[in-house]
Length: 260
Image (tube, rainbow, N blue to C red):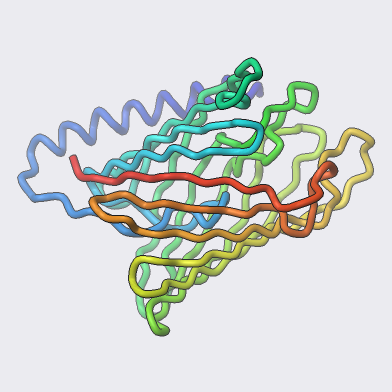
């Protein structure tokens, strides 16, 4: 099945979900609450969720003058739907090269976190990062694709959050694998947090393969700057998994969340 057909099927069901959600919202007078749960570690998803009638918009600045804009909405406290789009060379003096597809993002929370049980989310994301390589049908940093992830929070001089999951990207059909990842986030002084994320690598010997099979080790910092704004700084690929990497890939983003 072509990737565009999968995108259309997912978009069709998500559109139906939004219509049903709108009808339910019209009957609800409950004041929405704003979620503070992180939706990602650095690149990969957590089990975080936007609450009912929450909207999150993110503008990420990537290598090669790239940018990605993402908008996501929360429904029923358990469903999230979003769209993303971007490209390379948007900033700079080179011709802008936009991504070939609009990214689709969908997640459903299967289990809420309790004292003994982590929050568990199943979802799909077709939005990758960095440049898109047409010959390999993939982003330099692949999209997660289908995923299941779990998150558990602990009080430890602030909060310590542990995340683990598995995902299956639909990109690069000749080298599709089920990958696993894990990460930790630690908060400091209520407004700062540090994140570390690792995704396993599967060694393949294709001459066109972009990765060395070491896995990806990423690090990030976040700061809540008030009025719904959050600023993030990332250093990706610290162990040089990408074939052309000589130093960590540095990116930044700004996120704004509000209720509607």
